[in-house]
Length: 168
Length: 196
Image (cartoon, rainbow over all chains, first blue to last red; front, top):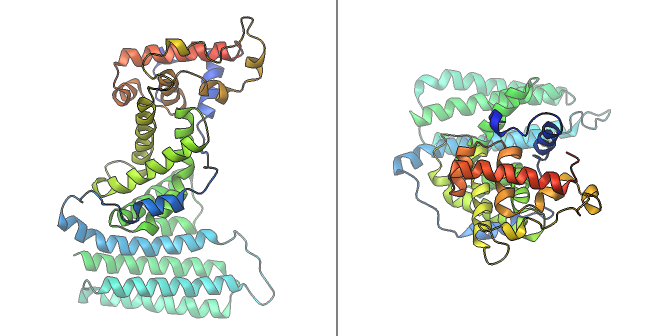
């Protein structure tokens, strides 16, 4: 709150009113999902031009990286905090590890078309090996949620590095 | 970074930073034409945008939903020019406020926005301060304020804006903003029957 003193409704009842008003600041979800209509409206809508063509070009790797990170993050958020687990292990973790890998590989392939730097290859190779080891570990221990997290972090580092190579 | 924060215990600050970075990443993708990223922004911010619009126009319903939709469409159009000098959520919130206020100004043929004297007694409690006003909750009482007074009250007391910002957004002098706030609070107290 940035109110200056002269704007304050005062002490006592005025102060109570101010607190009550502050409490009104809350999210209110629309009664209907507005996205389908928004999607229809923006589908063929002309956009304001971006500032410069160079800037647009430089955003492409960002966008690709972001889309993967967000996809990964989204999948992660969908996971229950302590998901239903069976005696045979948690198939959700394995499925999500596979989805994560596919997303990652697809984006990586697109990003690497922009070019890579040979000096980064050892580091990239290390990360790829780490990812492979984690996937193997998930196969052995499908209950291990922390492995999925480790995989996600490894992919994120790999994407960051590839993105840096593509942008320099 | 989104990834780091997902795996470790997060403080409120970290959570906010992660949310801001995720927003920025989505916004950059959306600015480049990625409607899926924009859908993610919509999912995350629809409640906040709709909330401030509901408070500004004084009610839920189709009108507020239309404005929320309009705010997101405008955001999609304007995103390519967003310079990321502020947080995306701040930018979007301001855009939602602007969208709602523009609509309020355009409705001068209905309840008047500038000349509101005739509306000052609308929804006021009976002379004894009793009756329906006593059971009127604060949110409803705010919604019955005249549009300009309500806008100033909501922006200042609920959303935490400064008078300078409000005056600029509403095209009025800073003194007018302060006067409207004073008036809005007085009306509110009357409508609440002097309870608050």
